[in-house]
Structure formats: structure tokens, C-alpha cells
Length: 167
Length: 352
Image (tube, rainbow over all chains, first blue to last red; front, side, top):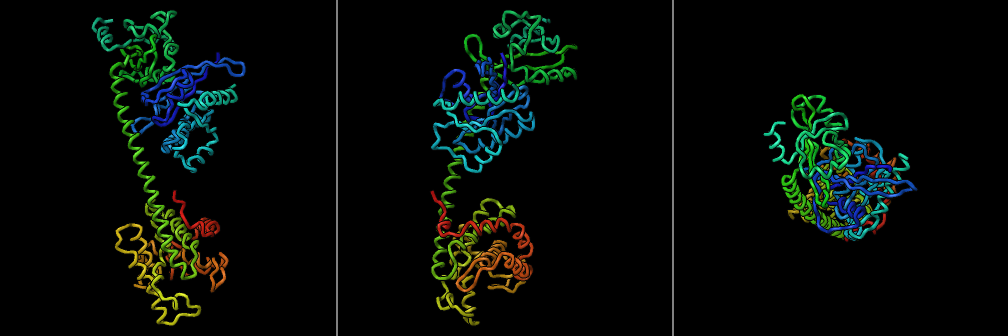
């Protein structure tokens, strides 16, 4: 069994825990419960005939009082940075986290997930922000943990990219 | 182990391990109930692989090893993490590495109530931040709408004069954009940049008070006619001043001073150098540029090279030389504004 560590990163309350719960346990709760520290979930899957065990690290979101410990990122094979489409600030946080990871760990497979696609009519990201995301070269996927949109696809896409990079 | 110490560890809901090698630890305290499930059946308390039991510790052990190497007696903490126990409940733990009695020690603590309190505190803080973020966004969005309306009102106001003289609406719009580009390069605050974008186009508003026979006269103005024409600066300023609205105050300042010259030979007050408000000095430069490179009923458009050459000869006499140098640095930006804003439809701000 191949084990891969992936980290869920992003500002607070963007839906990192909800995306993991949707993917790992197929459940969703509308109630916002903040994460403190780290919680690790596991998901076994078969990819291209290989058994892979994803160790998904749910890392507490960033705010003015909490920043990500770089030690959390050790040994990760890829990461997902989650953005709340209804909160433009979370896009700026995502970009600064992406830069921090690249400076700390280097280039690794990464995905930007614009979450809360169920509220797409309320999205507030402007063209400048979307352009900056595009310039990062990372795939940008739309997800909704609530409506189960693009969640499994996002994890599979990252797994595929990790497989291409690391084999 | 000392019975007293053991009792203290138990009361703190803590397990004490002594490091044997890079991966193996010996449980030194009694085994807290919550730990039994994680240590599993296969390991003995003498031989615990803690990173197998708690994958989270993989990100802590390197730092802990460095800490032990330096034999530090103060604890290095891992930060909290959450495990799920045998009945599906969340369990918050934290590890600490320290050097005790010449041995590398790892404490594993069940945070319990301490963690719940921290979660509750952060939950309140973040709920507050979310509410604040929503309110700030709402304010920003409403302010933007107000600014868009202000801009549209200003441009429609200016377009009134466009019916009487040759200036086009697109010229008016460009003046605002050129001025804003200059202000941005000068690192002005966003609010002030927005203000000059709206205020600069109103510089000739006072022409509304100039009789047609003078404003629309094809030939050269007589001295008397010119002295009447010059009054458009003061008329404009009077129309705009004392509104106590920053953008209109700035517009009044520009209207009054945009015909002043750097060497003091301008009008209406013959101000000199930096006595002339910077907003007006900027507007003067961009107004001359736009007028030179565009066709009017009484003149052909000048090519940009000739226009810039002519303006260079005015720097230091008519124009602020430092601002003109900045204008020259921004020429590619100015050119893009000139070529992209030429339709009357561009005039109206898309007000949602």
C-alpha cells in the first residue's frame, strides 16, 4: 500500500474540514465548527491499479491570530488550498499560503479549490484574483462540500498529479 | 518512578515516555485509559512506536530530536492534534519533548477541557471575524456603488458643457484616467486616486457660464473676450466649492487652478510652483497632452512625438518639471488610455 500525505490549507471557515468529511465519510454539516491544530483522516483508494492510502491532514485555517506551522508540511506529497468563493479575502490568503509553501517546501502538486459552488451566485472573486490564481499554474477546481460537487474529482486529480510527479 | 510524580502525571492525564532510539519509546508512567486503544495490542509498553500510533508525530519528531540533542529542560510542544478514539469521539492531544534526569522524555497529554476551552475561544473569535468580514464587504460594495454613482453624475454634469464646446465626452473620461494613473504612480491612497479620477474631468465645468459668442468664437479672442473666458476657472470653482464632499472640493481646486503656470504667469491668481495644488498641476499636464494628440474642429491632431516635444519645451515654465518627468515615465500607460477610451459609451460607468 502506497501512503501519500496531503495537506488541506486555506483561510479559516472556507470548508476544508467539510470537504474532507464529504470525501472520507460522505457527510456534510452546515454548522461551522472551527478546527484547532490538526486532524488526520485516511482514505484508501485504488488508482491506476495501485492501492493508495491518502493521509489527509486537515490543518487549522489561517487568521490574524493563527498561522500554519511549517512543520505540518513535512513529508507531504501534495496539497489543496481551499478558497471560499463568497469571501474575496480568502483568495488572497490562499495565494500567500501557496507562496509560503513553495518557499518552505518547494514545488509540489497543488490544487486551488474554490469551494461553496452551491452559492456561486454570491461569489465575489474579481478578475484580478482569478488571474493571479491562473498565473500560479495550479489547477483551479470548483467544489461544493454541501452539494457534493467536484469533491472526489479534486482528490483524484491531486492523486493523479502526485503519481505523475513521484510515481 | 516516584509515586508522587506518577500521581501528578495521572492527574494531568499525561503519559510519560523515554526515548530509546529514533522510533522506539518506553512508557515510563502508568498507561492512561485513553492511550490503550492507540498503542494497540502488538506493542508492549517497553517498545512503543509512537509515530505508528500517532502519524501526526512524524511532523514533530525531527524538532524533538534536535531539542533532545541540546538537552533542553524546558518543553518543546508539538501543538495540538485530534485523534478519534474507539467509540468515535474526538480526543485532543499534545506532545512535549524535554530532557529530564539525563534522559530524553516525551510527554503525551490528553488536553481535554483545556482544548475545548481553546476551541470555544477561537470559535467566538472567528465567528466575530466572519461577521466583521461580511460587514466590511457590505460597506465596500455599497461605497463602490456610491462612487460609481458619483462618477456618473460628475460625467453627466461635465457632458452638459460638451454640448456647447468641442470637448468630447471621451476626452473628459480620459482626463480622469490619465490623472488617476499619475496619482497612482505617486502612491496616493486609493480614495484620493478615485477622487482625482472623478474630479479632474470637471476642470472646465465653469465654461457653462461663458457666453456662446466667446466660447464658440472661431477666431482669436480679443483682450476683453479673453478676460471673460478666463473667468471659467472661478465660475467652475464657485459651482463646486463648499459642498463638503471631498471629491467636489478637489474638483473645485482643480477648476480654479488648472490654468496656473509653474512660472507664475498663469491665471486667475498667478500662483507659482508648488503654490499651485498638485491636483491642478497634474490635470494641466494631461489636459494639454490629450488636447494636442486629438483632432478638434479648429485643428488637426498632432503626432505623439511632436506633442511630447512641445510639452517638454513647456516643462519648467508652464508645467511642473518633476510631474512632467513622471508623465513621460508613464507615457505607455497614457498611450493605452488614449487608444482604448475613444467611444462615447466608454463614458458611462457600468453601474450595477
